[in-house]
Amino acid sequence: APQYPRYTRAEVAQHRTPSDRVWVTHGTDVFDVTDFVEMHPGGPDKILLAAGGALEPFWALYAVHSQPHVLELLRDYKVGEL
Ligand code: HEM
Image (cartoon, rainbow, N blue to C red):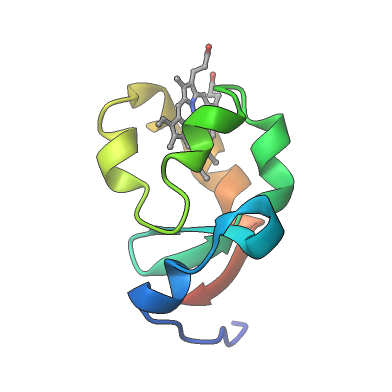
């Protein structure tokens, strides 16, 4: 299995805009989803609400994400671990 770099939540929080890169967490995984923002089916504005932090509070409100294909998509953007 690949070794990923470790990041703190404070480091993740510094990536909140496309120019600073857009990072999110899910569990203890860290993702750089900058290149997905414009492809998000729910639109760029919605996905950017989670930028720099955890996806779970938002995904709890939008059950459309509770499908295997969504996590599979996210996996491709993994850059690190908390
Ligand atoms: C839909 C991925 C973050 C709101 C979707 C779909 C995917 C996706 C794949 C389509 C699912 C389907 O129809 O089968 C992601 C990823 C995210 C993310 C990878 C983060 C990295 C968010 C956030 C919000 C959100 C933070 C809300 C604040 C929505 C909504 C839809 C949607 C409302 C439904 C769009 C529609 O069908 O009209 N998302 N999402 N998403 N997402 Fe996200």
